[in-house]
Length: 307
Ligand code: TUI
Image 1 (spheres, rainbow, N blue to C red):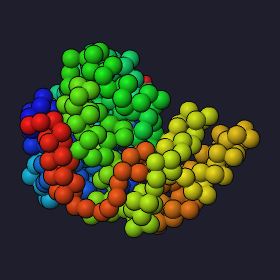
Image 2: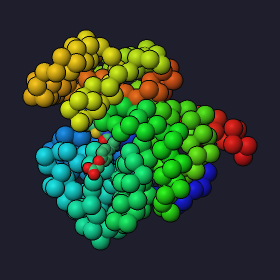
Image 3: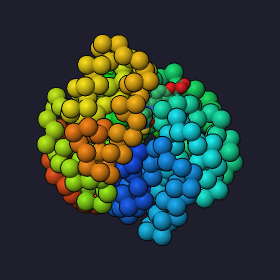
Image 4: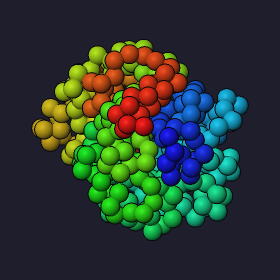
């Protein structure tokens, strides 16, 4: 299936893997790219040297394009932005902020820049700043989220910008893919479905938590701190939300979440760790390879779209 996004990125299938902190390592990214999508290494809160090692490892595992996601709240964001430019990564996506200050450096290197946005205003700003495409991410997504749903955000962003739009948030199968195309998107980005991919290095407990999750099992922590994060409900979220309601200090809330994602992903602590996942967790039923996931979605979507 050809779209402006497959042409722009030099990929076969318009499926992009979300740049999930701790989860989106070179193993997952190269598997997605080798399956014809766009794999992404998630810099998350990691150091610039870790990101460089991950890029170099991915280059050995695939000769297809892959990208890096720069989480803009990372204290080392400036250094990571330079590593991305130095290593000649083909594509960069950004999250949790405005990447304007890095845009020129990346564009000069010929890197495709795709900011993740949660509003029409930021999408327009990014287009004016030279973005090649945007990911319009709805509140159904896991992790750090905005407030608009995918169903309403995607067509509004499509109407507001000329550059291609990639839909994200709540998409986990061929039906979601086809629906996104109907909204005017030219590719989708998926995170949660790839969390349970065979090539994903996340702890088995985390994968099982996603697989077992039902429609209503995610919750949003941090509404009051300005950092809303969608996670699967557990003891940590219950305590967090109780404290948040009681109005405890931001410091205390931040301490509860600090390192919590690593605890869940790496150590498998799904009771007190932060199990970030989107509302689509209810659609994710089993562990499969990235190639199986991508082939199934494309086949189902093509039937639905009548091609
Ligand atoms: O970035 C994401 N999702 C993420 S980042 C992340 S790591 C993290 N861990 C702990 C605390 C905070 C983050 C986990 N999940 N998605 C892309 C995204 N970007 N969603 C929403 C936004 C966004 C929000 C506000 C983009 C820009 C923005 O404001 C723009 C401005 O002008 O500052």
